Length: 82
Image 1 (tube, rainbow, N blue to C red):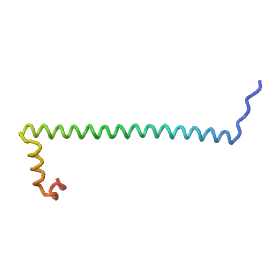
Image 2: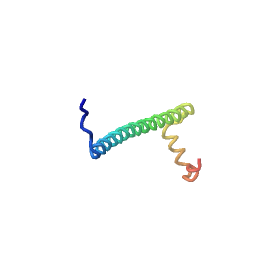
Image 3: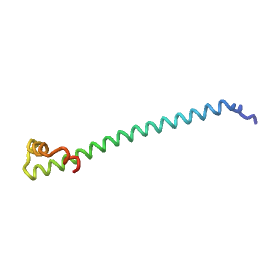
Image 4: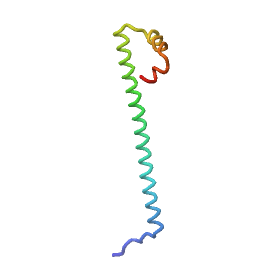
């Protein structure tokens, strides 16, 4: 039986390069998806933190303006060490 034409070294290298480029594209797409997921999770965490603060404010009967005034009274140096 006749066999197919053997690929030249150049063709083999070009095929391998194409495979590597395809793999790189797949990893880039996966990385993009993971970064989007990371950003979404950060936003969800932030929302949950604000919900917790809001719940405390309601429990203590503090308005947003009152909380803002309290925070503005604290020196910046103390805020950074907390």
